[in-house]
Amino acid sequence: MLNTLTFVIKGAGEMASGIAWRLYRSGFRKIIMLETEAPMAIRRTVCFSEAVYESRKTVDTITAELALNDREAAAVIARGNIAIMVDPCWRQIENFSPDIVIDAILAKRNLGTTMQEAPLVIGAGPGFTAGRDVHAAIETNRGPALGQVIYTGSPEPNTSIPQEVMGFASERVIYANTEGIFMASGTLGTRVTAGETIATIGTTEVHATISGTLRGLIRDNLSVKAHTKIGDIEPRDHVDIDKVSDKALGIAGGVLEAVLTRFNIG
Image (cartoon, rainbow, N blue to C red; front, side, top):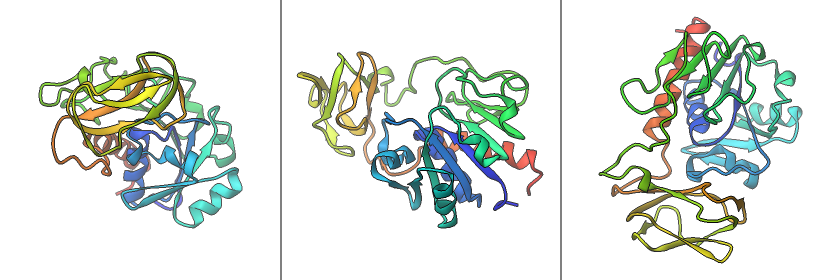
């Protein structure tokens, strides 16, 4: 049954990619991910959305390929890979008649997902109400409930506060200080020092907020608005930026539980 179920995942950023990665590792092979024309993923080393720019992206041995239509998507899946399509309005859902639709955009609100899209519709994070918008919602807030499957009600509200690591919380996240075209001067995976220039937006320099490993930056040449999230610094040493995060794996575990329960697998 693992090879017969078709998944459509809205989004291909960090958390959506972690979900797709874990589903694939669990034996599910018919996975299609829908993205925008210009994804702005931060932790690009673990985001299948990079395939939109590079035609293919491998995250820890699992590969996604860009498909231009449903026939190409079927060919990608036949090759044993995950299919990525540019479809911000989700029009391709009807073409695939999926068994499971997962909204993993993490927009902190529902952008239009309904329970009519598939026999099992799952929403990740705040903005969804299980039993009304989706069949199941997944808790995405860090803590003891991370990854919990909710069948009635909603996940915790968005706190807008990143998890504290070594005493740093909001300082770990870098936001655009102006609007303009983003260009990185730092390299992902390298150590940076607080105050060091890591990018420019137009002619304005962007500085590291703390010292640590530069874990994420958006792609060059993207147009950003002021206060847009553009980067992420990890204060801990020995960080492997090529591995799916513990948070993404926790959320993916909740999705996997909901799927196995709904289709009586196992």
